[in-house]
Image (cartoon, rainbow, N blue to C red; front, side, top):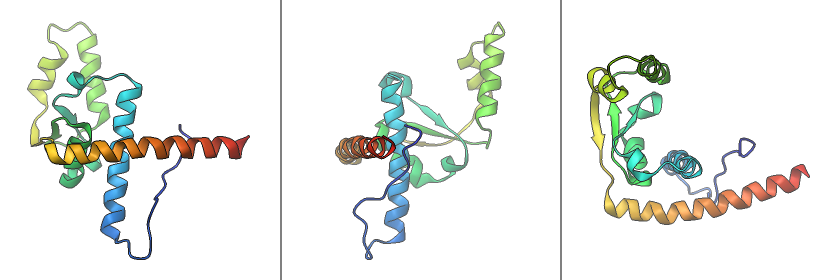
Length: 147
């Protein structure tokens, strides 16, 4: 729902900045998981997920992503972004004798890997189920406001 915006629920004057920062990172990771579900991206397709861009430089965030998705996340060495990935896909589609996987293997370097931690993945599963309920409720409230 592109009209839905983020919400912080249950915060008070005692809530620390670090807790809000962690909640934002978790919320974005939950959003990524939700997208994978809506797009029917299976767990097998997510194995060794390669991540690049500004957020990928934050190791805490990458570990949260690995735990939320319950899959290995690979932080790329270079700062190349989506444009590089698109270029690789275009080259693969152009009928070269090299597969996309081979091109990625030759050009993309892994800086660090983040493996899901079983205990944390279980906790994030519980949090994710709550996230989906809150997401549904907020979507409904917004629809009522528009109507």
